[in-house]
Length: 147
Image (cartoon, rainbow, N blue to C red; front, side, top):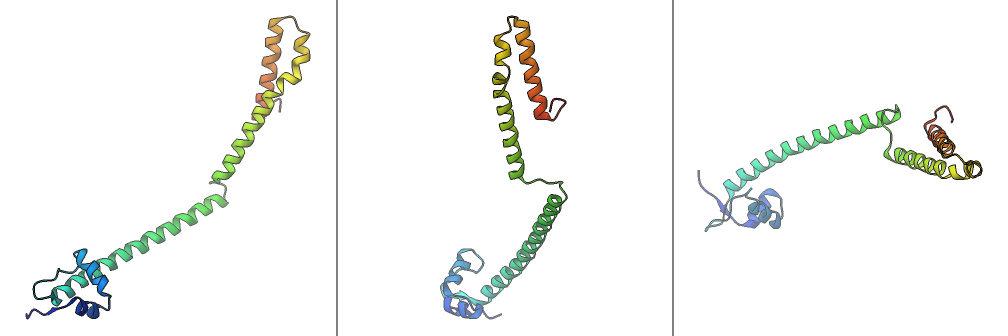
């Protein structure tokens, strides 16, 4: 086989690419470097064809990956619609509300029983009343008997 040599411009025209793209392909070692008498056009064509075949496989892999991502998104949307999956923002909002209710409930204990405690001289009675109020507040938060 006869070796044909050419310039960067010849390769660019042959592949319908810019000369800058030819430089990038040489840098990436997809096209062989320029020899003393120019670029080996046959080796360049072979290198570029090999690159295009690889790119084709990469494109197929990316299309498969995209299809999987789309299927995963549809699955997540279905789980959300059926209630299996809950949005993080909804959970954060609910946790915030529960924390606020717990705080308010606990902070209201002194206002509810301070008068009774002031009239109580027994430490055991104070302990019993405080425990009763705390249990009642906690059951209210949990939706239990005192709710």
